[in-house]
Structures are given as structure tokens and as C-alpha cells.
Length: 285
Length: 315
Figure 1 (tube, each protein chain N blue to C red):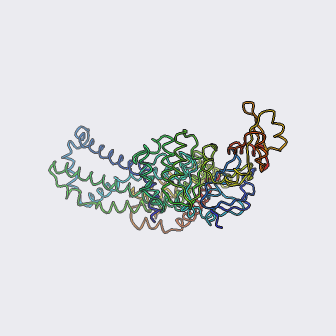
Figure 2: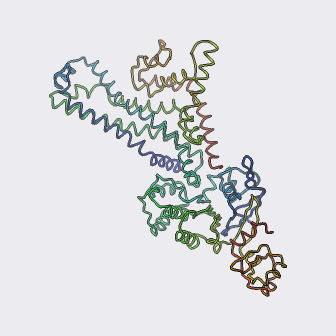
Figure 3: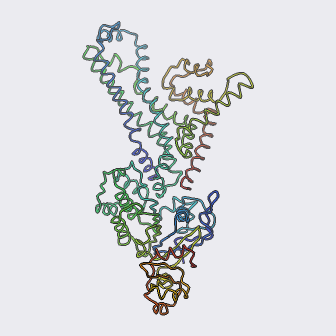
């Protein structure tokens, strides 16, 4: 099987700290992968290595290329939004479109203008005249008009209001994503992306704490909500995590027997956010 | 090639103010100043009572002398363009690999399939060719307007502009010499350009400081050590800069230097000191051992700038 991203023993060291510690990773095509971790867990370091923006140790291959050596060639098939509002401030929208068209052979001007026609961004605008949300729309319009195999989004919606964020992901899913493409997203706003993800990777202290498809996650993890009198019985089944909400006890189980759980209370699939908290707080994976 | 032209276009767009507006403003100011001078000439207290008398006087002078003065004047029009161009290129290069690191837009540029070598190349070519060429075009246009203006005035005052100055001093020669000196300057200044790009790729902030302080500190130290050793002040880094500066093709376009300026910089004026604007003089300097050493230094600086640029997104 050909993987879009394949890493073996990938390590990124800064002077005194190890940001990414010997991780193995295999991401096939046609996936939307959420890379989720607390601040300083090594997400950005890993993404930078994948995008050829930083050096690393170990084996790493992205679309069959070595990112640290072939960044320019790799960027023919990879797009990324590293941060919203990092488009050059002096540039006009039409200049940005013309530049991208000349430099990127797989860019479609028609598509880009079509996306932009749905926004308030006009070709004569300078980036510095645009609001943060409009810059994000512009950047996304450009990126979605490039026919690449891998799209990497690092906190693409940071600082945007909820309307923009919703629209951003809707556009991404409806107009862009297909079987051939792979999207890798990191974000802190896990709730907003969990329904679009096909795979989930948790990263903690440079290690991978969870690497699983969403289907697997739904199968393997269960959340149980019980009244206080049943809490002790639930604890006996060795939950990963316990919390209290409005006087009710909520437990998170891994590989538990669902019929057994149902006898104690209400069972449902945990949200990615709750799963994240449970695993980050020392749960086994 | 397509990518390179796109990247050069990008440099022009970003630096339109410096590359295009600046020479246009200089040309405009020059024309305004000349116009004002013409209008107020009669009010000046000078030995010629009127412009008409001055023109008569000029017309009576020897043709060879007139031709020489006119040629000198034709070159002189370029002087202000040349000196401002030097400043524009200096600050352009100083910001070339710094500005996008500072505002983080480097991440966008790196997301395009253009290699760092191509990026640095586009910036260097903008400094070496694009900016000088635009300045030259505006110089020529300004010069043409000045000649038209003078012709009209001369005609109105009853003299023939063609025999008075238009047919003399060959403006085409002056234009070609200035263009040649600009491009020769781009090669001559490569060590400096390389240094500026290196600083631009390296400086965590205030690139100007990083560009100027190290050579100055080095030069002062060298002066001091030399002085302790030999009690003379010869042959030091500053002398080298002075020599480089005095020999730069851009300075050459000032024409007919008598060496006073170089003498003030402490550069020995030898009998073969020749700073006239001739093709031979310019090529002499470009095909010299000094230039070869300069190119080697430039290559080291540019290589280091490229190395740093590749790693600019590390942290």
C-alpha cells in the first residue's frame, strides 16, 4: 500500500528539548486526519518536518519524496495553510492569484475566482485591508483551487469567529475533499472537526498517544453516564477516566463490554474532546 | 523561467515605491527645479543680464568645448538617479530576506513550489537588473524632457537648439555609458549585495545594525592592531572599502574625477589614476583580480544566505 505520509523513527530535536520523539506514522490517501495534542506536544514540529520546513532525524517520506531535500518539488502536490493571516500584507488579491497561477502549475484561476465570488473579497483588495476572516477565506480559496494530493492545515481557523469556522470546514468538505486527497488538520477546536475526520492521531510530549480511525474509536471507546449510586459499580469495570457533571458520574471505557455497561446506565460514543482529555490525563491507549 | 519571472514580478510589486515611484519623483523634482530656475533666471544677480545674453555667449564658444560641457551635463543628469539607486538597492537587499520572516508571510512563500535558490536569485536579479534598468529609463526620459524644455526656451530666445547643444555631446553615448555603468556596478557591488542578503537572512532584528556593525568593529580593531604594530594607518579594511567605492562603476559615471575625493579617503592617487567614463575603464575593473576575489567573497555570502533561508522556518 502506498502511503501519502510515511514516517519511521522520526525525531525532531531542538537544542535541549525533543519535540518529536521517534514516531512512526502511516497515512493513506483519501483520509481526513486530525492531529491533536496540547500546546507544545510537537504537532507543529511534526508538520514542519512533513512540509520540508524543518530538518529532522529518521525516515520520512511524503508522496514518495523527502521533504527536507525536495521541498520545492513536494509543494507541487502539497498545499498548506500554516496560520491564518500570514499572507503577505502588501499584496493585492489579483497579484496573489497571478503569482500562484504562474508558480503553481495545478492552480485554477476560474475555481479561485468562483470561490472568491461567494465572499466580499475583490481582486483590487490589498491583504492588509481585509479582516482576519476574509484573509482566511482568500487563503482557503487559493488553496482549494490547487489540485494537490495532500493539504495540511495547521490551526487554520485560529482567531476566527464561529460563522467563518463553520463555513470553512463546510467548504472544505463539500467542494474539495475526495477519495484521492488527504487532509491533515491540527486544531484546538476539536469539536468542530470531529464529525469530518476519518482518522485521529493524538500526540503528547512528542509521542503518539493514539492513532486510530474514527470507526475504531467509536467501536473501542464508550462513555457511560450513571447516577451516583451506580458509580462504585462502574469504577469496578476499570474506566480510563471519571468526571462529574450535574451530580451524574461519567466514565470513559476502552474495549469494554457495551451490554455490561448498558445495565449500569446510559452508554454513548465519547466526544473526541472527552477522549482527548482522558488519554492526556494518563489513560492507557 | 516562468517561475523566475513571476518571482521577479513579485519583487517589483512589493517594491513599486522604491523601484518606480522614487525615480519618477526624482525626475519630477528635477524638472520642477529646472523650470523654476528658468523662470527666475532674470531675477538672479549674475554676470549675464538675461538668458538671451547667456545663450549668445554659449553659442560663441568653441564647438569642442561646448561638446565636452554638454556631454558632461548629459552624464550629470544621471548623478542623482545613480546615488539614490545605490540607496534603494542597499535597503531593498537589507530587507529582502528579512521582511517576510518578520511578518511570517515566509510560510506562504514556502508553500509555493519555488525553490529557495530561485527565490534568492529573483531578489538578487531585481537588485542587479530590474531596479537599475527602471532608474535608467526614468533618467533617459527626464533627460529627453529637459532637452525638449531647453530647446523650446532656446528657440523662443532666437537661437538654434540643434547647433547650440542638441547635435553636440551625443546623448545616446551618455545613455549607453550610464546603462553600462549601472550593470557594471551590479557586478562590482556583488560582494556588498551578498553581504546584505546574508545579513537579511540572518538578522533576528534591525538588519541595518547587523550589516554595519561587524565591518566597522572589524575595521577599527584592525586599525588599532595595525597601529600598535607599525604606527601606520595603511592598507586596512576601511582603505579597502574606500578603494572599492572609489573604483565603483557608479562613481565612474561622475566623469573626470580629479582624485580629490579619493585622496580624502586615503587612497593613493597614482599616475595611472583614470576615472573617466570609458568602456575600457569599466571593463578594466570588471576583468581584474580584485573583481575575481570579490566574486568569490560574494559566492560565499550568497551561499550562506541560501543555507540560512532554507532553515528560516525552523523555530
